[in-house]
Structures are given as structure tokens and as C-alpha cells.
Length: 414
Image 1: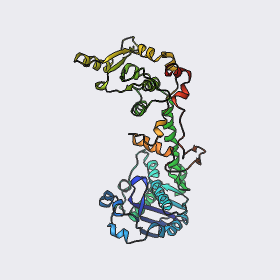
Image 2: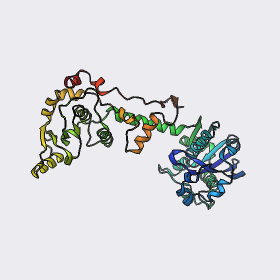
Image 3: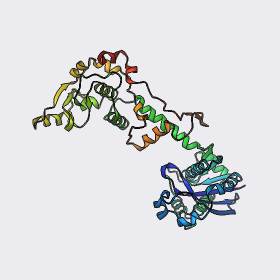
Image 4: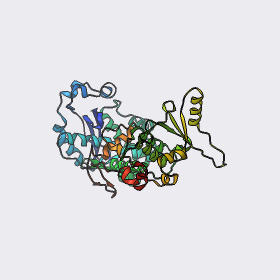
């Protein structure tokens, strides 16, 4: 039985693509007796400006010149592949990241994917410690009272220390690696055809959640929903006229009552689109507006709820501003629609999120959108679980507002 423990160091991971500069490993038998060990020092084959100098200063244990005098990854490819495929178990700490880095380098040099199962000591330790907290190599050594290799962030030292941790856990539990794997299936992962199973499954879940936030499912409340607030802000920042443009609200800079906005997520998005289609502008900054839409909202006790935004408008008018105040019902009359019609309108289109020039502040959302439009990976991959991950297309969420609202919008767009 052969166990391979390996660890990588990167010269840079900028842009989410890793360039490897160390492949450290140790191979043992099932008794954890060392069969072979080494640290392959790799020239990352990048310019001086591409090095991540935070990593160079604080993490890597060698000078740039020492890496650059060695061979590039493609030279070591056959050796690394043989090391991995010749072993019965491949083990590491947070090994999904290292497996992903290997995929990056294989793709970079046009090499075939190295497909293998692997096991994460971090996940084993979380079960061992009965914690959901992720713990680093050095902290696990300390908690297990192991005196390992002192040189942190040397790929071989980290691989060797990971081996010591695995050995210690099995000794304390008095079980074999196979028995621990059976008790901790979450520790097992696989990389195949340049894709990491766990990463793809997590991505599929993130994508599902993201798409659900655009569908309008769930609460229709802005006040209580962080996700609704985020999507509302994205829509407000990017909304543009659609279909036939009118002028019923030309030059109107409008803010809508918080009493309505906070409790009518779907409706306020539609209303914003309609206002913009009629030449108006919507903003939450009362200092910029010339028109305010008031709305009475009563709580469960029948008490009229105060509106902070309306209060600011009244104060501004007392100080000399001339903000026109229009009741919500009167706005709908101007637009030629009823509140009942507004209530049954479907969720607005968020297709703008997939336009190349759209700026999305939220980094997580931006990463998800980038993958959905196919800037990174594959089309129509089916995961081992059977879930389908569709990538490589913009995957339009809906048709335009004009197409979807039909006769209701035609009433006031003529």
C-alpha cells in the first residue's frame, strides 16, 4: 500500500489562476514508513511583474532566482503524474486548491488532465475534532502535540507535516485509513477532466441560489431580506428604458416611499422600470429628487407607519426645497395602470447583469455571472451526483419587459 502526501506553493494566484513553484511530497506505506520524498522546485515561467510579492516576502522560503534557474512545470509533468497515479491514496491539506492548481498548469501547457481521487486531512480533522471550523496545518500539529518540520510554507515540510497529522489521528482513533474514510466520506474528492468535483458541486449550489434570487421567489420584503436589497440596488444602478419610451414623467427625479418600497420588492422593481420607460429617473437620494411618491402603510395594529424618507422630504421643503409630493395612487393614474395590475406583473428582467459593460459591486455575484456567461469553463457538464451544470452561455433569465408584460404595458406605452 502506498500513500502520497503532497503540497504545493504558488508564485502567484492572481486572476484565480495558479502558477506552481514547488511540488513537495512524501510517499509512505500503510505503516507511515517513508518510501521516498522530495521537493520539486519549479520555474513558474512568469515575468518579474507577475510574481505575487506578498507571497514572495511572507510565504515562500526561497529567492525568486532559485525558482527561475530550475525547469518549468511541463518538464516535471510526467514525474508528477507518475507519483500521483502510482499511489493507492493521495492525501493533503485543502487539496482541492492544489488539485485545481495542477489543472491550471496542465491547461496552461496543453497537457492532459491528471485524474485522481484525493482525501483532505482538514476534513478528517474536522470530524476528529467534531468542529465545523477549518484549521491550518500548523494549528493541527499544535493541537495534536506533534513536533513536525519547522519550516512552514515549504511544500515538502507541509506535505510531511500533513503525513504526521494523518498518522497521529489514526493512532489515536486506533483505526485504519480505510476505516476513517468510511466514517468520513466528505474527506474524499476527485479531479477529472480539469474539474474538481466538490468545487463544481459547490458552484452548482451557488448558481442555483443566485438564480433563485433573480426569480422573485421567496419573500417580497426589502426590509427583511439582504438578498432582495442587493438585487434591488443592482437593478436601480443599471436600469435603462426598454421597449417604447414615453414622456409622462420626463425630467422627473423620483424617490418612492419607504413604506411601499420595503414591502413590495417585485412591484417596486416593475414600477422603477415603468417610470424609467416614461422618461423619469429613480433614486434613493432625497437630496437629488424633485418628486416624491407617498404611500400610507399600516402595521398589524392598524397604526400608520412612519416613513423616514418622507420625513426628510418634508424637512427639505421646510428649508426651501420644492419637492413635489404625489400620492402613490395618483402616480398609477398618470401611468395608466392599477395597483392590481402592478401586483400581478412578473419579476423584471435581470438580463442586464449578463451584459459585458454592467458593473456589479458584489464580488461573489460578479464571479457567478462571469462563469454563467461562459468566460471560464465548459458547456453542459453533468456531475457525478447527476446535477447538471450549464456553462458557456448567457442563459437568459427572461425576455424583455415589453415582451413579458404584454397588454398591461401597451396601455401606457402608446
